[in-house]
Image 1: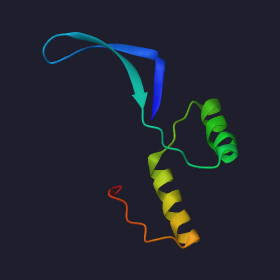
Image 2: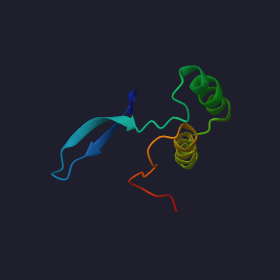
Image 3: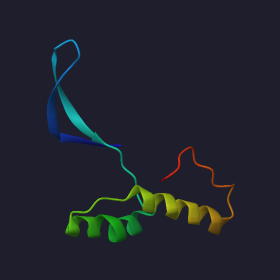
Image 4: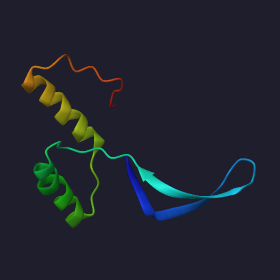
Amino acid sequence: MTFREGTSDLRTTPDGRKVNCIVVEPDIDYYKDLLAHGLLEVLPNGVTKGKTDPRIVYSMRWMAYLTEGLARFNPPCTIE
């Protein structure tokens, strides 16, 4: 999770109170290696202002499981 402390938002709770919240973003990365992550994901996304596509992460992790001969890839969700 990435906490965007510089980005806040004033929200109203169900009981009518105003609460100042920081933005929290789920962080899904293509690569676990820091150098590959920086060069092949962060840098291109910074230039294009793009976002990481969770469908690509899903397929890359599936391929890694097959390549490394790990346990059967059986995530708790599907992409349709």
